[in-house]
Image (cartoon, rainbow, N blue to C red):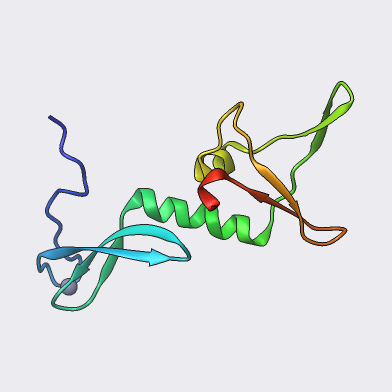
Length: 111
Ligand SMILES: [Zn+2]
């Protein structure tokens, strides 16, 4: 069976000490990392570091084009956003007015 990188032993790149797993919560995201007991060096799990990159990009805002499907307007989600928020085809998300120029989108997990 393939061993996940998360369960593998990690040594610190700075001092070569054994690192211990550490789970952090950063802006609501569960982030897996390893921490060195010796020098406090922290390495993030690559998948979770990637998630944080996408999240930071999204926080700045990304342009999304509005298309049309018959009479209705449709919005396309870039794949990385869909993956990040676990949005799949056919799923229902909640649109909520914030101001007259600002709309909020809520996924089911946000409740
Ligand atoms: Zn270290």
